[in-house]
Each structure stands twice: as C-alpha cells, then as structure tokens.
Amino acid sequence: SQQGEEDPQALSIQEGENATMNCSYKTSINNLQWYRQNSGRGLVHLILIRSNEREKHSGRLRVTLDTSKKSSSLLITASRAADTASYFCATAGASGYSTLTFGKGTMLLVSP
Amino acid sequence: EAQVTQNPRYLITVTGKKLTVTCSQNMNHEYMSWYRQDPGLGLRQIYYSMNVEVTDKGDVPEGYKVSRKEKRNFPLILESPSPNQTSLYFCASSLYPGVSEAFFGQGTRLTVV
Image (tube, rainbow over all chains, first blue to last red):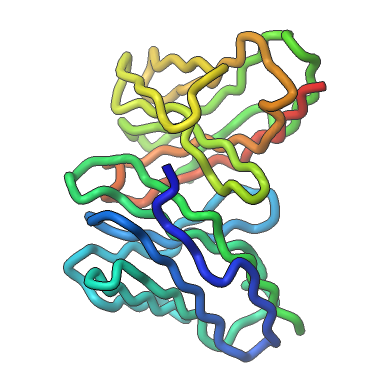
C-alpha cells in the first residue's frame, strides 16, 4: 500500500537554484528515508531521518520532518545538472522492523 | 564493494514461458525484497524475506514466487509470465528492515509479449 506521497510530481529548475520536494504520509512512522533514482537505474539511499528528529543535513541535502503534520521535505541547495533524477520518500512503520513503503516520486530536472 | 546484483538486466520473453530473475547481495543482509516499478504507480513490493527460508507476500504477489535457500540469494520466479508483468524489477537488501538503508540492484527490465 502506498504511504508516502511526493509533491510536486515534477520540478524543473536552473543550475544553482534550490530544489524543494515534499512528502506526506498517513500513519505513524519509525523513520522516513529519501532515495534518488537516475533514469531506469537502481535507487540510491540519500538520507534517513528518525521520527524523533526534526532536521538532518548531508552535504547539500537538508531534510526536515514534521510528525504532527505527517510530512517531510527534501531541500537540495545549489543544484547541479547531475542532480537530475527522480527522488522518492519511503516510510517505515512505527512498530519496528517493517518493510519500506515508497511514494511515487518527484522528477527533478536541473538545466545548465 | 557492497552491492546487490541482479541478472539479467534486460529480458524479453513470451507469455507463459517460465523465467527466473536472480538477485545476490554480498553484505550478509538478512532482509531482502523484490519491487516492481511501473509508470504512475511508483515502487510496489512483491515479496520479501526476513531470513533464510522465511518469505512473505508484499503488496502485489500474484503471479510471482520467490525462494530463499541461502542468505545471499533471493531469486524471483515467474512461472507463467503474462503481459501485465511487463515492468522494471528491483531487488533490495538491508541489514535491518525499515530501520537501516536499503541497497538496490540495478534493475531488470522485463517485457512479456
């Protein structure tokens, strides 16, 4: 069952601009993860934020989590053409070890 | 290098001809899973395995089988493929399901005609 829902579905920006993608989910979670997928290739893990964390950084990535609103955002600062990819959020249920449920993704296009 | 290896990368087959997509990981992960990815539907889980000889259905298991005889391997079997199983398939593994990062294979693009 689909849990995460990314917004927008597609985003087109220029190099150097910031890109913000949002993810909303429905039920309580243990953590939320963001993945990146280059066209037709395997997903690559970007960052994991636990339910008791509010913000996390990794290089040019900043992730926030608001459990009261059941939402998360991924910010990519100073984007590059190489950031062009689809980005997915995935949630893990609150009960502990559980399968990941993925959203449908945001397709990001960064133009030079 | 930590990796999940799927084979084949591309496969075109005919309806009803049994096929197996192999998946192997070298990280000693206990948890492995299969997903299919279709346009507009995102990734949907087919089957998962918590450990050797322990498998369970995901969201879309119909028409698929799996086995987990060894920790490193988790093949996906389509006994009688149909055109609606044309899709991009991914195998993934993780140390602890849901609480650690998942590692994905490069994908298998399957076309059933």
